Image 1 (cartoon, each protein chain N blue to C red):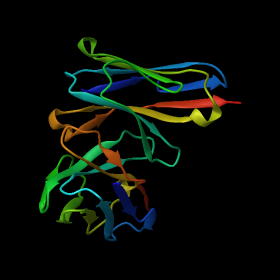
Image 2: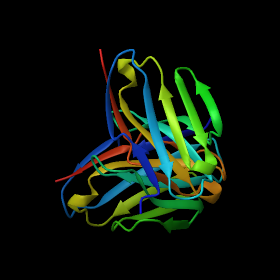
Image 3: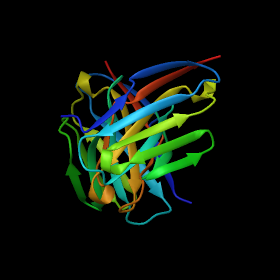
Image 4: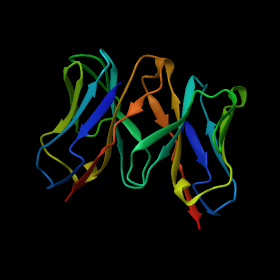
Length: 109
Length: 111
């Protein structure tokens, strides 16, 4: 079965609204990473191996390892936040990343 | 500073034709190297990884092969493209237990 599940699959917001993206793992967590995938396909790393709560600008990642879940909160969304948000689970030593299916976010002006 | 460069940026190829995609890492010796692939609308999945020159491990079989002829170079290739090879290919590097860094990708259309 799928090891990394993301929800929702897609989300449409009005500019200024907040977003909450979820990532759940079916296996034990070694390390995980949140990415933003640009419309052209390239990846931007947002958070790496977050445990607890971490902040980066308008982004907040909250990971509860024993519950095998992580969330990404985007506050005061902007149109430039539109794109796909991916979470990925890494195995021991990080040699293999397993990606979730992503959440496609559209922020309307 | 480390840089990762993928080429070409995009390719349009015919079914049955050969393919070679390249990836070069500068500024880091003996990195772990990875190839990922994403079908249009699909999930990113790892294809290959390499921890040293000349050594490549296959993760998913897609009738593709990979080689690492130099410490800083990773090549993805096939003799005969299939329609199902279309998609987006990403190269990445990392050190053990560190976050991978990705290249800008190559978009491949097989017609």
